[in-house]
Image 1 (tube, rainbow, N blue to C red):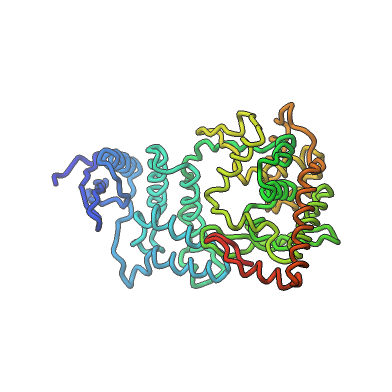
Image 2: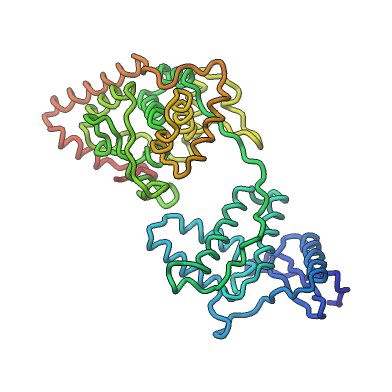
Length: 432
């Protein structure tokens, strides 16, 4: 490979363990030293462009970019080895997203600094990771949200490396991420939420199974997160005190029960209109088991499709519900939570109370729904209306039928509930 002028870079083709081609750039520093840059590129022209940019930057600033050095006892443990220790620390704290954290590090961070000593990683290398994420956004290989998640893992990790409470994780005197601009944020897609009038159409539509009308109703009237509703147990519902205790959630990725998103428990009041339905459902279940077992027996990937299908059955035709573009997202099951929070704001509920009930850590998160409330349309309707008689009668009838079946079978409620709990759930079913 021939030498290039100082303000130019050179590129060489490599192959990984699977035989896939990738390209790395080499630049010439002002003092004549030539360095390989860590980022890997899937196209030669992108590697060449990156080499030129970094070469010009080095010449202009007159600085020496850090080399890619092999690990040695003198230079300390590598960034990859340190991050593995950090992930074990996270697991010990009960953080359930360590799998995601490890994937982001391995995919977007390790190729640049993984084999570098964690104590020697420079600001320029952090910028190289940022530039690689920006390039991936431009190429359409990742979304801006994915890039932000990867960037968050990088900055949080180096924050721990510089100032962790655990001395064994504190291996740096500085944080190389400070002062470095993050990747491009891109344009986030706006969400849509159902109106009370649209929920009323679904709750009254007898073409939709009664258990699903119950699920949609509880989802919007409690505005629990889907994972929280997934594992809500009758022991969490205090019908006498008219409160629901939110203690846990379902981890969809690892298929296990975990703590709530904010790692805090909370109590939420039961809407008066919802109370008769919960009482009928409680009687039907004998007060034991999951509140909405049908939900936990449904594959998570099907929830959005089922929800939209129910809107169609109820002839809810507002175009925004089904619009799915680069800037707008169609209705999904989680839209019921967005709806409930927005309805509460429209009704005039105190924002602090809504924040506490929704389980938001920051008041700014709750305040976003104020904008949505101001943008409601003419067909909005009245927030949290009385439940339609057909839904309540169907639930009460089912509760009576369950009691008659138990009596005719000559078994107690306790035995029947035990039998129900022994029924095999679907592969994604939650067990509490």
